[in-house]
Length: 327
Image: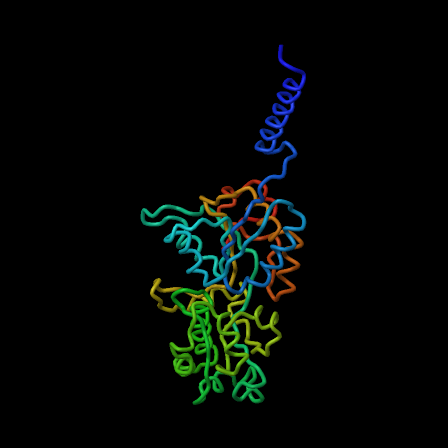
């Protein structure tokens, strides 16, 4: 007959084995591995999305948000070309998502819908150290920016929406002010050495006085407390009511000819997102009242409700936060 000690040891071992099995089963009370949500965003979304990530984590235990930022086209191509896995992609120009992620010309599709959630405007920022800072204003800005010796920074129009939106804005300005050659005169002071993949990479150069002016979004001006030009809505791409006027200007890039449109940032959940359910929760936060408040505080114009393209393809939990996008 086996001793009582043997029986007791066997029982304890069995209990330990059962406990270990419970730890391996989700939803049994054991601490689960945290979900790491990868969010790719346009460079100008760095501040609001970082704030949203931290606020979201406080109310969503077990989810850690890891945002990465860069030029919109560059971030999308990390998903479509480099085959990196992201849970959410957010860009500074809504057209980037259907153009690169919807699978045109036989390419695989990485998205089937998108939602426009904030608006912005293109402007130039500067500091008290910038050349002619005391002279420049909304009436003479295009003449000042074309003066010899002025250094202007901008982002790459082949990789970043603000790069080609800057060119579109200058084209609109030439027509608006009846100044042929306006764009070319200003761009002479924005040579290749002053171009980066995303304009936010040049903020430190502006602060250090290495450049005098930087083409960037109004939201960045407000976030960083820079002086900026208050350009008219007819040219700064901020107002949808001027969409027909904006469309009269187009610029040529390595990615094709791009017609000017109102600036609307958009986001989507890629079809191969590793954590689609958690991603939908984060998107709901971005589109919801707390996310909108953060966007507004950081200088964006929040769209409420957000505009959704292919709304029927969105996760059901998000449809109530959007309306159909009609143009």
